Length: 301
Image (cartoon, one colour):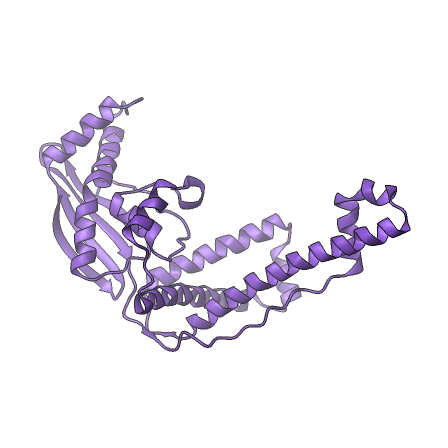
């Protein structure tokens, strides 16, 4: 594959145009036809072949771009087919985001207390009824008291762990406040919609009506959107801040550690693999993507 163009629509918003030869396309077509259940339709076959060619051939080009331009990618590339001709090959574009020029203020000295939520007597009794009912009914007075003390300790330990996790998140959020500079608009928008999806899923899981939520919070729809947008940008700055700290402190994993992580790739947590250079980036960088972007193509007008 050959690089035709590389540029940034704005700092951190990377755009690539590249080409593949007819031979590369034919090799991908042959591989698709040799596999199980090859696409019968010519258009589907071509789409599968283009995806295969990108996954197998784009990696060196991507790695070279990252190295030459000193990029620190934070998302998977999103591909678009621009032109395809079996006799000539294809031309495609890719967009991905990297860390833009940002200023990092202090990144040590943050303080956040661990504050476990208080335990109510009702919570303890519900826990006993749900998980220790037979044990409680069979126990004498001393046994009942001992059971309640044990359940209280277990619940409090869980609350402490939850409080620790919340404190850690808040510390990272405080780091985000120290990250100054403009962010790519599309990256911010993508994080906003990801936050919106997560919020909707939480509402559905807890069977909460949105109007009820707004009433309890004392917010209008517009105030809710503004807060969600601010929270999404703050989390994005926090994640980018972690990468900036890793760069300052040289906290990147070794090649051996990345290789070990790749060998233990968990599809449920990390999604399907893409191409080698990008998968190594996913395993080796302290970046939690909101979800893998699948390859897609469309015939240009």
